[in-house]
Image 1 (cartoon, helix red, strand yellow):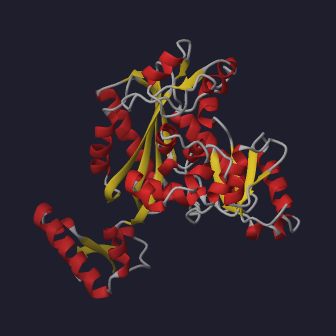
Image 2: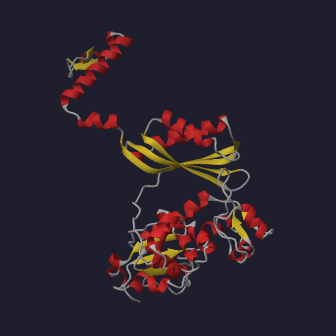
Length: 395
């Protein structure tokens, strides 16, 4: 193989496969991922049989059912998808890759720094990737992210694909733009205008695409010419979460008490090391089947359980049905708590002033004996009561 620098791992219909679970027969018939409760009524990933009816991700449920009345809607499992995809990314990182992943089922990484680790060639990197995944996957390579995605989309599970640039992309369908989230909605509009291949898209004036589609049109123009934005690998992060199994299906006040217990447990974990929480993931397993998952970003890093309960309690109202279990996980840490950092980073004068003020307030509430110190007067005495005495604490 030649020397492209981006490798893409593509697992088609990853979310649909995870949601279907052991019901593999669903994937042999027309099936689509149902929309999450409370979200826009658009189908998610679709099976190969559903694609034959012209159904594609992002299509409205009513239109999809009108095209195929026997279409099976599979309840989504966002928690299972997140857990399964995290395991896949961890396996890719085990070969030394710095992985970027925009969507579950797609992961890209630069191969230049891995060649010496795996035989000195790109084939060695691909072989190590397959061995780490331990599951069938499509792997592609190219000089940019989109070229690698296009190569992986047309690759076979046992043979990697290669796209060298715009020349190799010219005959590919515009539906490949759905693999890039910012341009995912353009293929349907482009096909209405009679533009069916990326070569036809590349021949259009850049200004015309910008005028009609805005930033998404500019991105589509660059993608059709084999260009893409640089990779932004994810940062390694600690996995810190708490799970609470509920004896009975819970909702209302009982669920809020369970949430408060999860918050207290998470903040009490020693692995937190005093750091505040910037973003968390609240998830639940539903009684009626499926899961629910919501990412919550706080306005400022928090370590106050009361404020965290208030912020998360509002999201808990979005739960579509009673829950069997509740999960709270840290998605991103913030800096250490400001007050705790100041206690150790300030000078001796500031610490003495704060301690003096604390003693004054304690004595104002509890009397003059609220703050005492132990003074040794006769440490060698055989009578314990004579060894030390309590005296007022003064700075």
